Amino acid sequence: MSVAPEGGEAEGPGADRRPIAARDSGFARRLTALLLKTPVTPNQISLFSIVFAAIGAAALFWAPRWPLLYLVAIAGIQLRLLCNLLDGMVAVEGGRGSPVGALYNEFPDRIADTLLIVALGYAAGAGWLGWAGALAAALTAYVRVFGGSLGQAQDFRGPMAKQHRMALMSLASLLALGEAMLTTERFVLYLAGWIILIGALLTCATRTRAIVSRLSGGEALIDIVLIALTRFLVGGQAHWIASAPEMRQRIYFANHASHLDALLIWSALPRRLRASTHPIAAADYWGAGKVRRHIALNVLNAVLIDRSTQGPPGAALAPLRGVLAEGESLILFPEGTRGSERLPGPFKSGIYWLSQEFPDVELIPTYLDNPSRAFPKGTFLPVPISCTVRFGAPIALQTGEEKDNFLERARATVAALASDPVE
Image 1: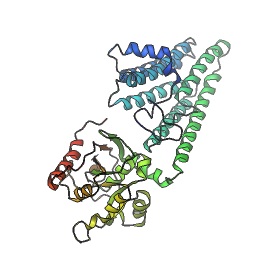
Image 2: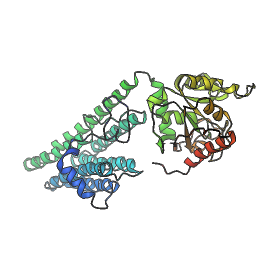
Image 3: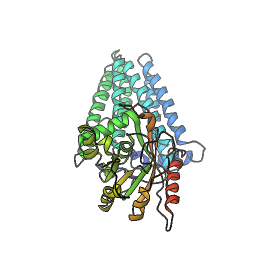
Image 4: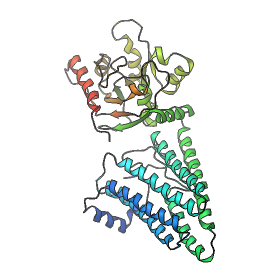
């Protein structure tokens, strides 16, 4: 597994893996091999990191009274880091990853960080400093993951990333032990708390600046704001169940439940795909009002369709044919109108004619979970309910396949994603 180069895009399951030099050490490999002979899972190892962090935090909290506990604190910190190393190696090198592995990779880290940094603050006699440092540390992770949600490689740089914080806390604990033998002051821990706080804030700044610099080649600030609002309000996390976010010409066809649908799919795509992917949107909604129209045309690169226009059969597909003829991709809602049911209704024939005229374009079934609850009909603002976007295996129009059979098969592939496990 590799980490994408600086400024690059995330590619494949290993692209967002923290680079750790110790991963290549003989000790780490031997210990991983030993664990693989047991039934232990990566997720269990991740949970053990919280246990060791809690032991280290408790020792650190009481160490000003019993200084030898600083040594226990150091041991807890280092064992927590060892767990962080081994859970990834058992998952990736050992092939024991799970669908919820990403969750266990992040949440225990946030808990362990908070326990240790807050304990450092109280040990220094400044509880508020510990809480402030823990908040700043969590923010560094948020900025990193947010960059990943934009399609970039997750940025693990410092100057105060997790490994730097833990190294500083270990050193501070050792120095505090020496300090306790000379004085009752807790200057070392207090200074370490401030260094963690300031360093974490600087880390947030450097990571944010890197995100902006990568976007400056073509993605405007409004894109960032729009995606951030979408993530914050309704989630829209992408799950590539049987396909991958590749640079291919595609038609993403999905169930249609709300006016958020096009935005959800568009924002779920990596940045490199968004630039060449055009949602199909209703002109009577997205073309109404300057702000909505600007977002649709200049941010989403949407193709607005007037649903009230009457014309010869297939006339409404002319703008879509134009986009596909230029080698671009589409986001299409074959139902033609919003539905209130969990599963998609009957598909209209547009996707059949497009697949017939453009046989080399991949058809990617896409399922949106919860958008009708997040943005019900008749509401002005979305409700903060988590939505997901599931991308399935590509399909194609088969030789001689009848229109009705194809439309039902395409609809069934979207419906099947409603019950697929989220990975």
